[in-house]
Image (cartoon, rainbow, N blue to C red; front, side, top):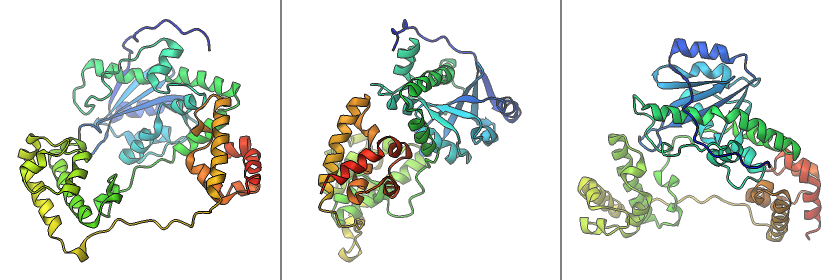
Length: 388
């Protein structure tokens, strides 16, 4: 890599604010002739019960646009651009944005290039946008607005400038990373990963018990599970009522401890790690009522955590997995990437269990990518053949 450029703060970029359907229609029309555009999203997940997209930033042909979905502006009008496979969309860290576009606007993204994925496959030690722009262009992005409330209106000019800056350099960065990927013959690796990423979808609504989506619930006994479920309902109802994210009402750590210890008074509540006297005053009585209700449920009506029936473990699988992991570590060092880029743990487990004997049989390991089969396929088959 050439010498690092001199560091400097970016100038506030010029941008066009799109806050009505007529302006959005004009933007959509102008983007139809482009081959590649840069896109980013800002959302308000830190501030509201139901998170939503608050800004959509687009850079194309040297021009910057900020689309405001919270104004009289139907972002669905951008679907002919974002769903067009002939126009490449450059994102950085697209996983959340892909889910958000689908959830809020029903838009299914096609032809994605994710600069964060590209950086990871190039072995960059830091794959965030800020360090990449700093190392390539000397640009030092302002980070203090990352966790601000993007649903505020009007947004101050400095936040609008921050948002616009996220896409200003993205197209140029993508071209540099593509060139480096071509030099390493890894562009098709990233293209496949990006194609898979376009199918990311938000988690469907939870129709079953809330505890199924609570980390640590699987280790609880039935009584504690019932108490946990009751507490989660209290938190959810309060979060809806106050329009706040769940974690800003009550954190997971005190909830888990609450389900296990089941305190029945305010003193017991405030003794829990992460539970304040203020919270006890605001809604402690509701929690105590929920705990008491959970303790009174008859034994025969208590819930149990569902256990997935796993296929019997092949006794030879652990040895095969170790061989694959050792090879993965060595290959990661040779390629200059994290070992998980070479193979994920899920891919290793699938191959260790199935022991494919040919490239064709690798297709039965659904976790394995086409690029991995092309680059490492025969080596993987040979490694597994050598293990009894």
